[in-house]
Length: 175
Length: 221
Image 1: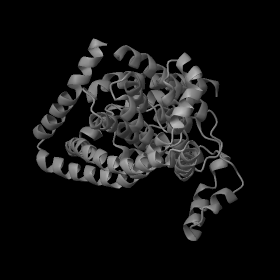
Image 2: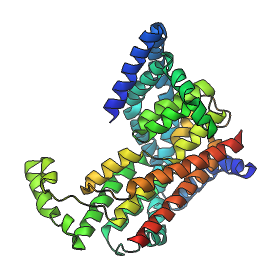
Image 3: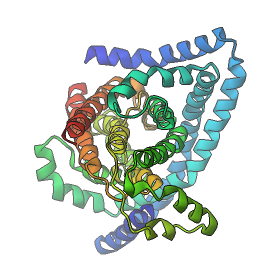
Image 4: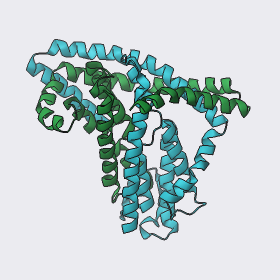
């Protein structure tokens, strides 16, 4: 795990060095390019502000109503047997359908348990290695007007399961 | 989909809050969260702008294009029956690289194009389910209605390439989870980037499982 932590520490500076260095050597106007991209980035964030407000409000209300606590204590016996904190169950389910709705739940885990707790680390890794299965499938297959998706769903769920198992193991080693 | 999820969340919250007598907490929950969303976006804006700025440099320096060409052996392995010069290949490559670099805005358009060209490929292969593509898309353009698509009566089966492409895509290939780092930073993590390497390891594992599954299925069919 020490090695993994080291990689995590150096990867961003190394990437920045590499990209800026490569750009500079290939005579790209690096600073101008950076400004243009950064501006685009701001637009992207501005576009998701309303989404985040809507979803954080919904999750905040659910948390405040005590619904999550109730759900958590209902699910606890099942989930703790497999090493998943109960508070992650709604997240896992929602993530299959919508990544922005899942984001609201991720932030709730961070707020209640902290991003460096076991639940927080597990959530971070989990969200980085899984995709929105049903959403992606429906959008992409619609583009090809395919209705019989054959083994796609099984494969996608299998990959998601593999990612989940790996996340549980890795997060367990980090705390 | 999101409409239903969001409505259920809000309605359940108010209903459950009323039942448990926590209406004032629910009120505060709603108001606090709205403010929190804004402070979160401010943190995110900085990190996302930084990443997108770097990516613009990478694009202009030809790095992204180079990477796209660089994964050609991998594509050959994953899609052995996809003709070397077929346009689908380029779109798939762009989609995968955009995924790896976390360029969400570039993934989806390339991915949709890839699916369309894979459908075209089935038509070229003489798959009868796909034969009506051109005439139908013409009609759709004229009438602008989506009903035309289903009116053909033939239901299309996904090709092996489509299944492989989607399973790969869903197994997620992201190198740097930029958003997750921004969120962790906002909520006071002592080391927001600590998750990068474990996330890459977990992603690799799920992708390897996805690849093996697709290869087994390919052999069977």
